[in-house]
Amino acid sequence: MLDNLTQRLAKVVKNLRGQARLTEDNIAEMLREVRMALLEADVALPVVKDFIARVKDRAVGQEVVGSLSPGQALVGVVHKELTELMGGQASGLNLASQPPAIILMSGLQGAGKTTTTAKLGKWLKERQKKKVLAVSCDVYRPAAIEQLKTVAAQAGIDFFPSTGEQKPADIAAAALDHAKRHYYDVLFVDTAGRLAIDEAMMAEIKALHAQLNPIESLFVVDAMLGQDAVNTAKAFNDALPLTGVILTKLDGDARGGAALSVRHVTGKPLKFAGIGEKLTGLEEFHPERMASRILGMGDILGLVEEAHRNVDQEKAKDLVQKMKSGKGFDLNDFKEQIAQMRKMGGMSSLLDKLPAQFGALAQQAGGAVEDKSIRRIEGIINSMTPLERTKPELLKASRKRRIAAGAGVQVQEVNRLLNQFEQTQKVMKQFSKGGMAKMMRGMKG
Ligand code: GDP
Image (cartoon, rainbow, N blue to C red; front, side, top):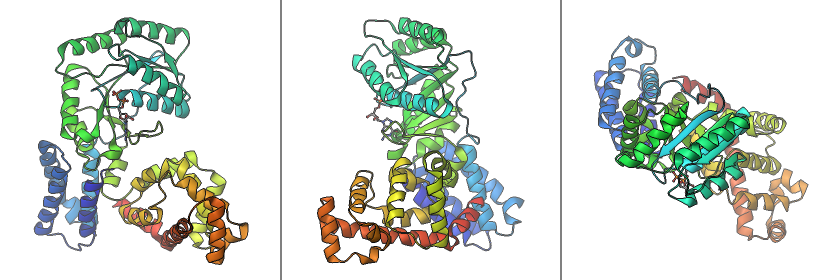
């Protein structure tokens, strides 16, 4: 996610931190680098100009030059301005209306409206214990109604049926009536994909909006469209009073232009980000944490929160203890760690949240710990005896052959696993050498 941008900015940050003295020259050099990185990330030009001007203003001011470690202070300025650019505070959903709180979903076809409706429904149900109903007003594609039915069931939220023969206004009215009578907290109204230049379709959604008066009107847009995503959001916002934007497919977006410009260009907050095809692939958008991630400082808070939600606390404490001591980390722990990673949304989502320097290390360690090979690894470890799991050094050729046969894999795979285990042990040692503390200090920048 946003890999290109992060790599470039992380390099600038690293160089800056090393500067004991800031001069006009090295500030100008840094600003040039940041400017290039943002333009390459496909951030809109006026946004880049404004951003650079703000950083420059503060950089030559007291805030930086007068400070003890000016390089560090400058990184802090960039971090603050990035945060501001993306909206400052996380804005969250507003559900403070007479129930049901109505959430109208709009966007282009294929943007991810239906998937996001289910993701958000699941999120509200599981995290906020809301009773959620979803309805589709996409009378142009009966398959879209079926799709919502399917994903709603997967998400564990209720679905209100509709058909291609009905009018969107009638569907919405019937769903609202049902939601009121059955005491739903939230009603999602999914709509057909449309372009802002399609007047008939825009008239339809404006009418729906006037009829429902939704407390949230969310525009769903594909982050991979870059500046086009921002332009469509703007056109939509001019036509319909949106309350927020959801960027989907951020997991596939290496550049990040949309994430950085959408707030500035539309004036509307980015509320959530889609980070995967699965229904768990959704994150609340936190500008400050995103800024940290973009600067290669990682999102430790996000990681900790994920861990709290998904991880068995007792086992986690155990692991932390072992990480701290750097001792006694064996294959049982490795297996446990992998199982917990799976609960936390898989390797890719974890790596995204680690600071750049750890991300690279962990990537080596986890390289093959892709979500699909996780089960194979568990299978191999299951084929070991308890003694072998605590003393991996016992694993010589004949034992490896036995284990491979037991797990139904080649011996090479057993070797690969042992390699990964050793790499992970190394990462653990890094953490235990005060890596974590160092990292947190770096973040305060
Ligand atoms: P709609 O036409 O706007 O309702 O779009 P859909 O919900 O049908 O989504 C279109 C495609 O995008 C589907 O294949 C989804 O699985 C995929 N998709 C949606 N959100 C995300 C996301 O955050 N990440 C990824 N990788 N794929 C997504």
